[in-house]
Image 1 (tube, rainbow, N blue to C red):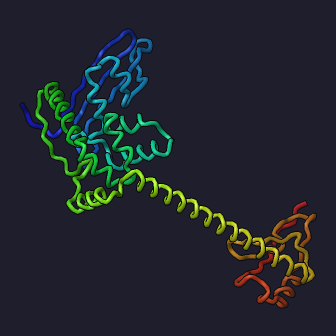
Image 2: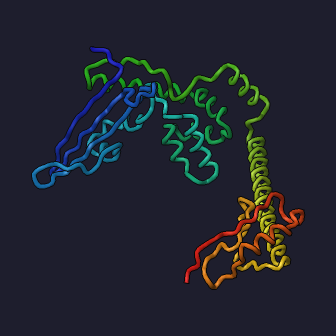
Image 3: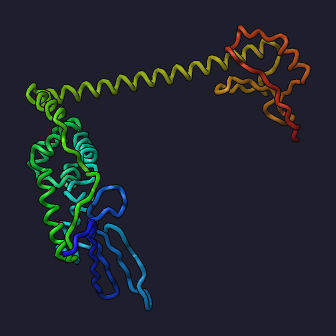
Length: 302
């Protein structure tokens, strides 16, 4: 058989008023250095005398309704040629965290990582990515993924009459370094991953998160209080100087105070002469440092 770095197979079934074309591939169609599996479909319905597209993409439920034998490709969709799910450690840890926090059931993690209840029981206790990465190898899950992929490759080779040639320059999971394996093993031996230690770390993390938020809220409140104090200080100074603050605004973000910012005869306005007189008498030591006063010359509207 011809060797190829990309296997592509397509088949179509016609039903009453409907046509479905399924495509199976194992290739680097995205040019990202990873040869991965894909199972997609185009679904058409007869409209008068021609077919119109009514659905496309990974319509796995519809595909498996008519091609149950393609389930292995649905399971491996977006997995690399070794059967490893996309971003196995990162996305796997995300699903496990959702389970640990009660946001999701175990189903999403088990489906994504294609693991059994027994394997999930171990992985669900992982509280960091390193131990999850370690356990994926230690439990034989990575080896199981590769076995599934080899089975799927054989099926796809039989369907296409070609032989797959792997040339990926990247994979969805990297082997653990000896340094990381040694670190994880030392932590296991020291009881770092015991239920008690995991619970203690979780409690510490929650407390740290709470204290961080408390500090953020206090800091935000202080900023708001400072803004209020600044504006009060400035308005009091303007009023005590004999001017009205009815048509006056202070922009805290630019530390700029503007007279006559609103137009219209119903608002008090100060003259250019009064503004200049005010500027000549300003005692900046009683005001926020760097403040600038401006006079807005707007056209009166009636």
